[in-house]
Image (cartoon, rainbow, N blue to C red; front, top):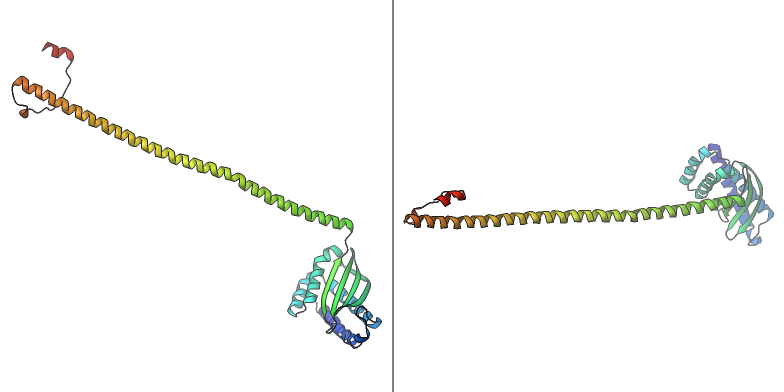
Length: 257
């Protein structure tokens, strides 16, 4: 890992040196092209830099990314992160097929076609014209039409599948509402039935009380009548008579009296 760090640092220093030499002749250059010397230097540095980055073992990438972030080299950290993401599709670095350096606005750009074990990839490296520092590095694998169609189909399938799953979940929730309504109806019916049962019991109790009062009234009237009859037959006052009980006598006996 130390060798890789030293290599990247040396490349950055080299980039700074060639940027200084390029600045001295920048007034003689046009806005869209570079002289052969500057273009060659940019291409050489870019090829070495992309070779260094893509040669980092997969198990060391996380550590290297953390180191670059700590040092403030965000462009290199992003380049290593990009390489980590495309490594499964590209395979190991083989060689740089060709590279072209040019100037775009306030940046130098080197566009390279890099051969990896699995496929070709387009690699672009941008440098600041004043400081010569790397500002951006991109690695874009070249996919075949079939691979692109397969990826597009997979993305479409995943998106549509997610939408349908959400719709199915929502429909299940809506279906559950009818069971909630049934449960609420049963609860309401149970409360109403309990209320009706209580009212019936109260009505029965009231009816029993009324019938008892009626029986009591009938008994008092019967006692008064019997007491008056006994007093009349004996020629005494009813005040001295107390009726203890009333018992029906068989009808045949009173007829014989």
